[in-house]
Amino acid sequence: MLPVVTFVLLITVTTRRIALWAALISALVVPLAAWLWWGSVDELTLITLGMILIAVLLSLKTDNEVYFKLQPAVGGSIFAIVLFVFYFVLDRPLLSTMFDRYFAATYEKTLRGKISVYVFKEYLAVLSLDLIFGFIVHAGLVAFAAFRMTRWWWLAIRIPGLYLMLCLASFTASRALRTHMQ
Figure (tube, rainbow, N blue to C red):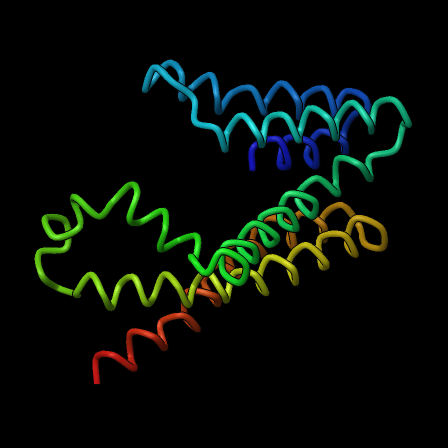
């Protein structure tokens, strides 16, 4: 998020090249902070940094900001494909699989019996499905905005639009909880 805001703010008062370089430099803040705070950097942060690096370099080489602006659409599309493969090909919804791997051992202690593991995993499975469609729609809107709308509209679709999509997907996935709670 920081590189996107940095880019949009700076490009309004300076050149495209300066805004792109500043976006790249600001993208380094997250992994640096993670390394300083936790002593390590997770893979998703490094992948995101790599995608931003590629997008910035392509934009600088071609003198066209559209590559930078398409980076979230590409990332969202890739994530939708990963969710799709886990859900439909492997028959293991990604969020449920991640829960089993990273959180199952501490789940009961954390929620203290407020919701059963079965119901929560059902919610995560439905959320995995809903996010496939959510990320596809968001990626399409971001790509459209990158080509056809102002930078400010692109920013609005890119960041608040992503959080709106995540909230809507979570809300629609909660139907799994409502079904099991009745």
